[in-house]
Amino acid sequence: MDSDSVLPLSESFQLPLIDLSDQTLKPGSSKWDEVKTHVRKALEDYGCFEASYDNVSTELKKSVFEAMEELFELPIQTKQRNVSSKPYHGYLCHNLYQSLGIDDATVLEKVNDFTQQLWADQGNKTISETIHRFSEQLWELDMMVRRMIMESFGLEKYIDEHLNSTNYLLRLMKYTSPPDDDDDDGLEETKFGLRAHTDKNILTILHQFQVDGLEVKTKDEKWIKVKPSQDSFLVMVGDSLGAFLNGRLSSPYHRVMMMGKKTRYSTALFSVPKTGVIVDSPEELIDEEHPRIFKPYQYDDFLQFFQTEAGRRAQSPFHAFAALSNTPL
Ligand SMILES: O=C(O)CCC(=O)C(=O)O
Ligand SMILES: [Fe+2]
Image 1 (cartoon, rainbow, N blue to C red):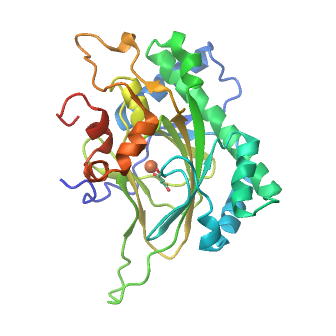
Image 2 (spheres, rainbow, N blue to C red; image 1 turned 30 degrees about the horizontal axis):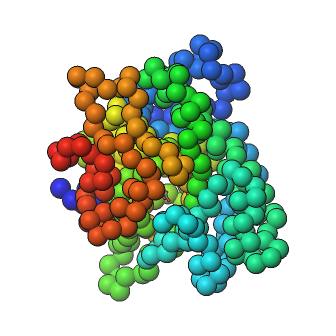
Image 3 (tube, rainbow, N blue to C red; image 1 turned 180 degrees about the horizontal axis):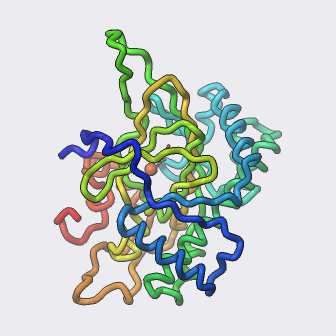
């Protein structure tokens, strides 16, 4: 079945909600081990979960929202100056969707480079600091979850190497509401904001600013709506984490459906394998029962493949690129 054609399962379905705000949540504590089990189970079941995480203050989220309003107000020619050496890491725009990309968003100088792309010479100090602070706090959440995942698969000895193997891309997104359709039948039309895809990176931390639209596909092929919530973030497995774990976790398909009259803003922090890093499963995860599923690869080569005709056409670009067998997983 076409992955875009399934209807949402239920308005009321709730993904697992896991509290990661607790200040006493430290590696080695019994609370940590308990939460780690929930994280692993949720990721096995859905490839994602909602993290309740109030370490990012309401004020900071408000500042990020205001920064996004200001950034997207800039003329299109200005936004197009947001370019990156990596494909798909700069300004993107199609139909209802627009997005700005900030490479190395956890490094203040790099965020300054981003605002200087848009406001030549002087940049924008306030916006740079807001984006940097927000990225730093979500970086902590990313590392906490990845540490839990590594521990839960018995990969303690690789934790430092793994956490150091990525940098962070922050994406700011704006979706305009679908235009009114001509036949005034009173029914609001739902339009794609973003087509169904899996993320290609390691882990994604997503936040919807009040307006909903995000849907995630379950293993039994149902689309479920992810409700926006003030202090929660959606934590989602990317293809490269699935490959690193030799398929023990998989990246869920997700999409954005737009309806109604509201403009939608969202942010996503992506941990991305650094240039030169080979994504490869540790030997601990490969045995007779679990033969190697993916070839070792460099993330940048995958991005290049994704730009080709074959990459764009593949139903699952990641499997077309990295799977050792042609059988779809
Ligand atoms: O805007 C959203 O909620 C989803 C964005 C997304 O899936 C992506 O950027 O990969
Ligand atoms: Fe995505």
